[in-house]
Length: 317
Image 1: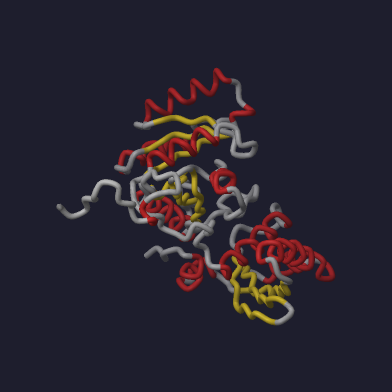
Image 2: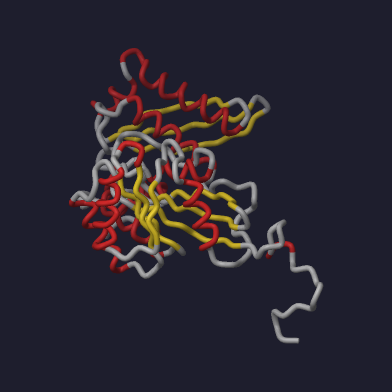
């Protein structure tokens, strides 16, 4: 009997088949697109829980975030990448390089386009960059609930002329329209093989990093217009106690004037950020959370390689 063959009537190994007897499948799907196309919202929708932060500030996602879900007999690992745009600073460059790297490491690349905005110059640049991506590619038009069908069909035709897509999906990441068809397609398209993560996992993000991301989300939501782009949150300590978990975090800004904005009059702003973050972390961890935030000024931190390593980015040379 040759290697890998099996006697009639024998039961395949449990880790290679689903409960229904179908071969297990597992693989990576990279979600790419321009800033604020809806990648994080879509991944949270498809995974079924929040694994990536969402704000109305562009470039909220800075590093690769993986969301894991099981559909039918397949484990699908979604890779939420930073938005792709023309970089102006080192941090921009690091995020764009990370986004394209995430695409080239995946089994399927899914380009997400905001159907309301259509094919902007930035979207056109991403479509051109897909020529260098060898993996199978699909097109996802998002926010279809806000766009007439005629415009959607026209947008689909233009995008498919600019790049070769295996399939086009029209979805509403916010409402879930079209997501079931997308999931069924991706599950069938994953390579055969055992699951890559434990079945209960929904993300591979360490809790310390997830906690920092949650606080950064609340920071952005509270100070969207006032806070400059260059802010960053790190979890400095994590201590389990009988009363829950104590988390100390540092919010890095570049100038003293920015520190005053984050703290707010009489500490009101930092207190509101801490309260919102603590509430969500308590729900996620299912235990009391004692969160302590410290605002630190670190001039020109966007040129500090250590900060990039903390974010999971490579420092541009």
